[in-house]
Image (tube, rainbow over all chains, first blue to last red; front, top):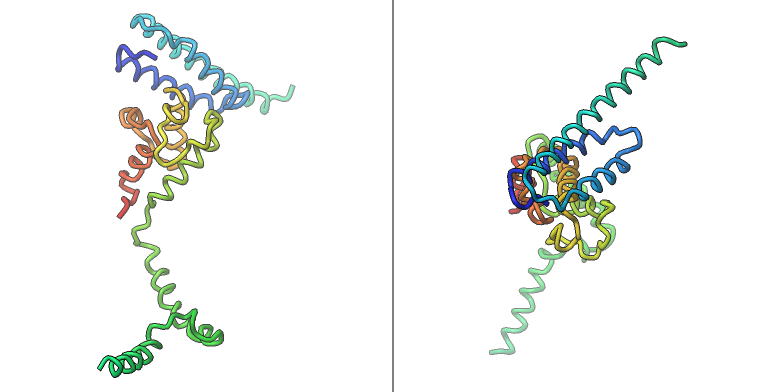
Length: 86
Length: 142
């Protein structure tokens, strides 16, 4: 995986780690998240074009933000649900 | 001359023997009388030493904890190959992403944070144990 450039390899591992940390509180459970994430990353294993790898890292960054947004939304909904009983 | 030295030697042994007798060799009733006296000082010292003694982790403990962690890691199928020298990729069949996960689990187990650079260098059980022991809180094997 991304054997061409050690710096990029590093970045991929870092984002993978960050995503794993995010996944600890995933609604469907950590194991669900972990297997999916692993599969998603492994499916991109063959890519060796640096530009494409950078694109992939950006995509991972995007996913990370999406998950963050999901958590905020969940928190907001929970809070709202506890405060206004409708 | 030889016949005279042997009895003398035997007497010496007989005299010396009680001193070297272990508690196991003594009659049953006596150890119970002597044991409290013998053990009391050591426990007393231990209670004092608890606060400032060099606790830390022993190599066996670190290795045991890492092995337990790997045993419970679902992607390690072949636990028979798991030992103190196992390589994550070659022996346990983990890919680079699994290695990241293992390192994360180790971080959690020992409540430390391993910087990316060091984390990248960990590829086997032995390297992980060495890294943990090299930490300020870890006790290097004497």
